[in-house]
Length: 265
Image (tube, rainbow, N blue to C red):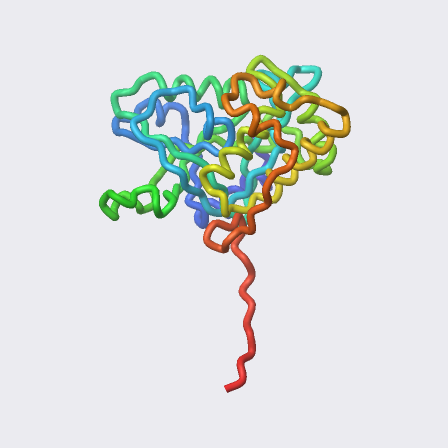
């Protein structure tokens, strides 16, 4: 159960990020098509049927590998680390949203089991902003922000690991493995999604962890492609060097501070 200070902080942020806690009963009574926003493994392994998917972002949050996982990417004795969102006034998080048909009765129960029962996440709704070019050939109304179902792990859940030095998180990711595969695969596939879908985006936490994992694996003579499950492009994932893309402000993971320049007239 949330303590009073935790509840207060969440409520203070709800108005700005349009985040609302969404009960399971309310979602079960869903009668219309709805969107689900993913920022972790859902980006590359949704696991449910959908009518449409688009890349986009949510405001007011940053992605962090602070949630423990014992059912997919780790075990009880060696929990893996997976992504959750933490409140960040200037942050944005890129991911993928999936449109689920109104008549679909399987997606929500599947996600409830995967994310809530096994993962320790809670259900919320949030404003999702499609990437501007996702609907370039469709009416402008489809480019507007949409309500989307969102799964977030909060500190009160039993799997929560919280912040730690990045080298420690990277080593934990490198060492952990669960029923769904290695924790390394989770991290690298997510980083690959970001480079493929939003190459200009800057996610310092995600890409710093990726660089550290690749460095530690190289130092320890660990073959990363052997940890990537059924990945098709093994040669790409096995590359130890990752090209650095200078981010543009349009896709930055944080809203930059404004700077003024004096001009002589």
